[in-house]
Amino acid sequence: MQRTGLQRLQQAAVPLYERTACFRIYEPSLIPGLFQTAEYALALMRAVVAFREIPDDSAQAVEARLQRQKVLDSSGRRCMVILEEAALRTRIGDAEVMAGQLGRLLTVASRSNIILGIIPIRDRAMWPTNGFWIFDDERVLVETLSAELTVTQPREVALYAKAFTELAELAAYGAPARTLIASAIAALDR
Image (tube, rainbow, N blue to C red; front, side):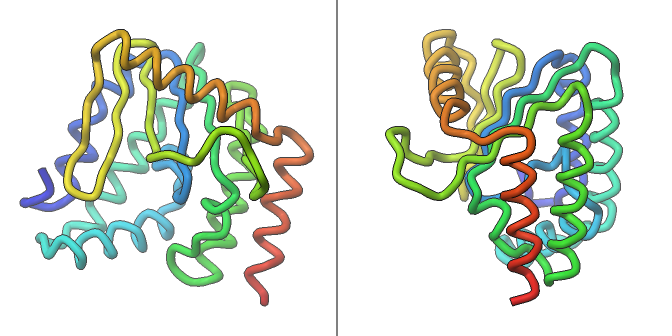
């Protein structure tokens, strides 16, 4: 899917995003594309291009990703995001890029249609898993190193929904989540 670069992939997802009323996103190590700054997305995409040895259309792919973020402006659309604290501390780009990204995370978390939970690093019952995105109750997308898996079998979608619920119960929200983000920002100076 990435043979020709990344822009086409970013654009191909637009119809799915536009018809989704409720996103449930779990990411263990990265900030989700819907919340990424241009600088963070560019650093991430350049790393993918280099690793995969594919044509570099990173700048165009970033623009397409930023355009895709506009779906969050639609009324009635909700987005519930659970991040592992590691996603706040995994440095993509330099300290300035991460500071900007974490600042953006604070901004989007204040929107009324977005619920952001951060799972602190600690002992827990539910283990971290691959990141996954649930689109309404219709499908789940899971990205692996070599492929993007689309899960549509209702029993399997329900399994991901159950995992999301259990992960969400471990998360901090509101002021405690903002404290975890602020702590990650402060750690950038060390």
